[in-house]
Length: 141
Image 1: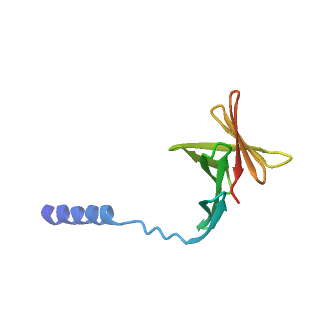
Image 2: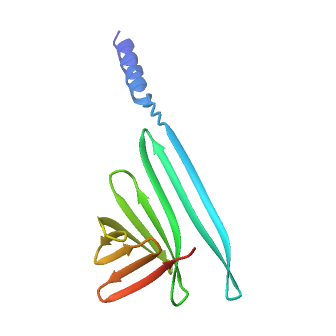
Image 3: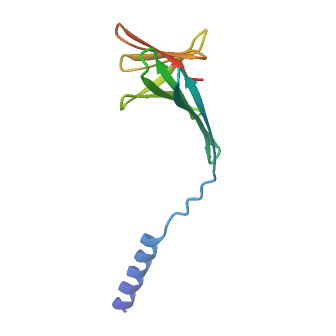
């Protein structure tokens, strides 16, 4: 009798441990990519703008990436992400990535900041500031 109870208890424990939670998420994703070739003083540049929208269980997240170029010819990519709760900008340049948080809307665009680095956006420019250094980037069209 003790053996049957022990086996039954072991089987019940095994059944409880091996049950998986069925996690069914409804997911919807949309991607868009635009690539253009620009002839600038005999040089051919490729310009890529990408956007993505993702919906998981009714929560939407969208991101849009734009290429930027500085006066010295160096390039950067800025990705604007919004998930309903927060907005961020991720700036990638020279193998370095900065993630800044949305602070406020300005007259011409938006202001993002984190760890003494700030970025102000306008429809066609991005101004990155750290201390007294200000870097002006123009959106590649």
